[in-house]
Image (cartoon, rainbow, N blue to C red; front, side):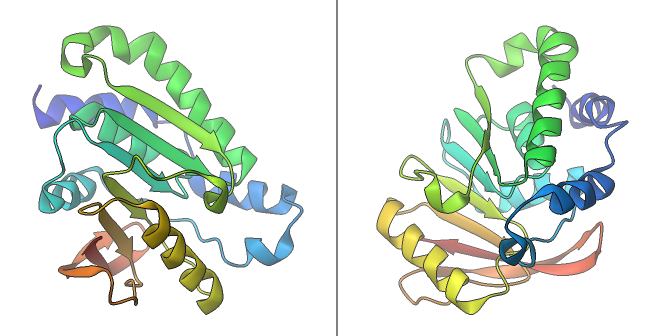
Length: 205
């Protein structure tokens, strides 16, 4: 399946989704105002995410997690374009998670039947949960857009990665790199996002 057709399918799925307004509403509805301060919303362009994943050289039939998956854009693109065995989105805010599930329903009804040969037995999942409560042991590639600003939370996340992730798991973050030297630094590169230019950091356990 060519890239242009994949992107057309993706744009059809998200043509009427305004993630920024949904994020604003979802924040207002969430009880924990302290954690809300740590959450930012931003979208990764289709072509940019494709380039990022290709740069990681992901394991064939691996498992991909997007931590803070919003409306599921990155997860959906990963499911359609790449040969991940599973593409899993984890989102704390119910409003964003619910929209991702709506898009998945639209995908299952209108898009999936057209590309069954391409998808084979790939799985697509969206989980409404705090990322610290999710078991990441099966992950082969993890993406986290806008990691926590709070230093203690960020260190807690790094500890979780080191405790749960298997060797050679790739981790991709925007804006902020992992600090613990137990992670192998695979370099960085600047890309253009919905909010402007930012740096992507590549790591490996």
